Image 1: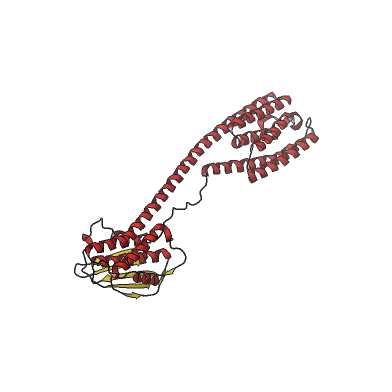
Image 2: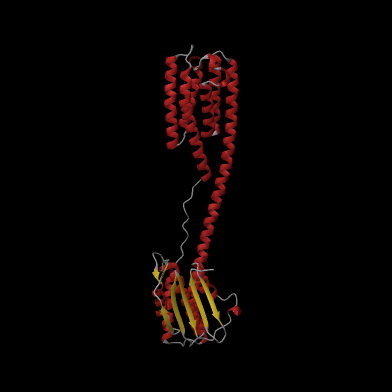
Length: 391
C-alpha cells in the first residue's frame, strides 16, 4: 500500500478581492496626483498677472511638484498610509488659502483654475485611500480652505460654486468607496469559505483514499489467507501457510506507515512483477516479462493489481497454474494474468464483492489505466491490465 498523506494546498491569496482593490486604489491615486502635479505646475506658471506673487507662486509650484513625485513614488512602492494622506490634505488646504496670491483673477471663475483641480484631486484621492472617518473630514477641510481662499480673492461666486462641487465629490466618492469595500469584503469572506470547504474536501478525499488502499491490501493478503485457511485450501502448519503469513505480516507493517508513496523517475515494471512473484508461493506461475518502464505510481498499480489477481487464483482456483505476461508497445504497458482454473461468469459476481472491483479495477482506474476480465465457467480466466487507458 502507498501511504496517503493529507493534501498540500496550493498557496492562495489571503484577500484576493481586497488585494485587487488596494492595488487599484493605490495606483490610480498615485498617477492622478503625479499628473495633476506636473500639469498643474505648467498651468500655474503660465499666468502670473497681478496680484499674483511670482516668487511665492514659483516656490509653491516647486514644493507641490516635488510632493507629487514623492507621493506617487511612495504610493507605488509601499502604498498610501495615513501620513501621506494627511500631508497631501495639509499642502492642498494651505495652497487653497493662498489663492489671492497664486491665481490671477481672470482665471479664477469657472472652477477651472489649477488650484481648483488640485483641490478636487486631493478630495477624491482622500476618499479612495483613507477610511471614511478620516477622509470625509479631510474633504470638508479642503472645501473650507478653497471657499476661504476664493472668497478672499474677491470672488464669492467661485467660492460657493466650487465648494459645492468639492462637497459633492467628497460625498459621492466616499459612498462609492464604502459600497465597494462592503462588497469586496463579502467577496473575500466567500472566498475564505470556499477555501475552507475545499481544504476539508481534499482532506476527506485523502482519508477515503487511504482507507481504500488499506482495505485493498488487507483484502489481498490477510483476509485472503484467512479465507483459504477456512476453506481448507492451505493446510495448517504447512510451509505455504508460514510463507503467506510472513508476507501478510510485512503488509501489516506497511499499513503502520513504514512504506512511502512511490516517487521519482520511471521504474522497471518487470522488476516489480518479479518481486510480486517471488513473494507469492502459490499458485505456480510461469512468467514472460518484457523489460519496460512506467511512472512509479503506474508500476505500483500494475504490480499490486497483478498480486490481487494471483491471490484470486490461489483462493478460488487452488491447484491451477497461472501465466503472467508483460509487454510494451508504443508507450502502452500491458500485463496479462491467465489461469487454467474453473473460470466463472463475471456478470454473476455480486456488486459487494471487493476483489475485482477495488483491488484490480480500482487500482488501474486511479492511474488512468484499465482492467478487463474475461472468463467462462470451465475455461479459465484472463485478466488484462493496460496503461494508459485507450478508449
